[in-house]
Image (tube, rainbow, N blue to C red; front, side, top):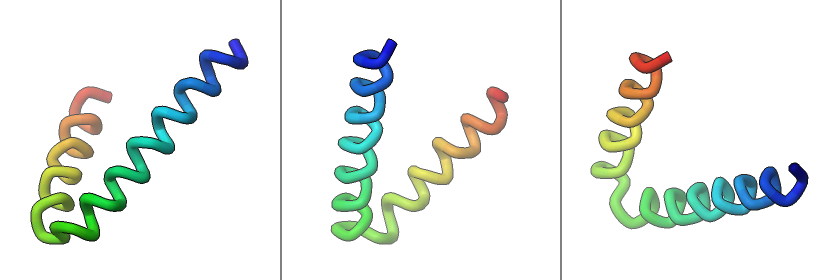
Length: 45
C-alpha cells in the first residue's frame, strides 16, 4: 500500500513539475488544454 501510494505521489509530482515548466514555456496554449481536461473530468464525475 505504502509503495503504491508513494509511486502515485511521485508520478503526480513529476506531472505537476513538467506541467509547470510547460506552462511557463507557453502560457497561452497550456491553460486551454488544461481546462479541456478539467471539463472532461467534471463531466465524467
